[in-house]
Amino acid sequence: MNNWLIAFLIPLLLTSCMANKKRDADKIDKQEKAMVEEAKQGKVDSVAIEKLLAAYETFADKYPGDTTAANFLFKAADFYRYMGKPLKSVGVYEKIYNNYPNFEKRPYALFLQGFIFENEINNKDAAKIKYEEFLKQYPDHPIAKDVKMTLENLGKTPEELMAEFEANQLQDSLETAKAK
Image (cartoon, rainbow, N blue to C red):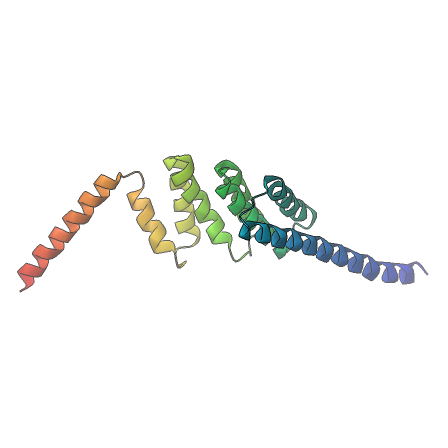
């Protein structure tokens, strides 16, 4: 009798959990659509944004193994970044990187940590660590070349970069002239 009852209750509980997850995700989708419509009308409701961010993070806490949770967290990190909260953004990207090893945007979560440290927080040392970790973990990633170049130029002023570019151009011109 007990085995039959357990066999009946487990699928029932799983179905209930899946329905709750879908309901929660649909509610977030509605919040997003409402915000997009308001944005099209030139309205920005900071309270609605905060509620959406809380919904993203609550969903991720409630369903931590779900890919939808990782996508919601990625959106939250982007929102925090554009709201001028770079440390919060880095924290969310770090959570994605640490907790979702199979998430397709995981490499970008690591790269964006470095990018924010470099460009928004102005912490070149932390940026360097993230960029080096990116190259170690994803040497063949489509943006790896760009990350390598960024790392090589980290901390250089625009004037220094321009001088290097001009020197390289001059060197290329001299080598071309010698080859003729």
